[in-house]
Length: 224
Image (tube, rainbow, N blue to C red; front, side):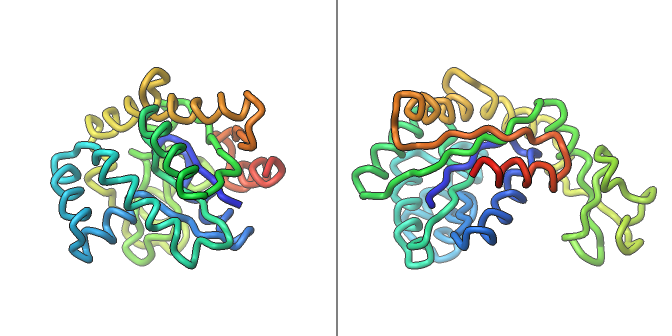
């Protein structure tokens, strides 16, 4: 099963992707990780990508898509993959669709995690990191995982926040790209939704990202 996942920063898309990976024994491929791997290995595409990433700009399609296709063709993707973080605009969706077809890689399912923009922003700014274990979930805006004051709800460790999680300008910039239904990320999701609606082989499903992780997982699994 080959899956394309959409959802704003703060929607829990990455968490659900990890669960789907384990459930279906497929690879969870994050576009950011592809960039970091190419950059760390010093590839030509990685060097070019870094120039754009350092400026906070999107990496051009002619750099990104070849890196993604190369990753999806690796042995660990033979059983299937879930691609997370790309495409981010409608033009990229069109080019990715064309590139996948040209490479003989079928796209089976597109998942959209739906979440209100303000809730997504609160979730990002509310994240807190435990000094003992970053995997301990703490978020001041989510009742189920709200920390005990300034201490980790799991182990009582000291908490801190990532500087980029508190950068409202950066968050708003990312969300403005995502929630743009004309040319942005949602427009790219809707491109595949239109293909599915026209009798294509792609299955397009939406999942409410507002409930608990367990509830979102239950809905997602029932629809997959």
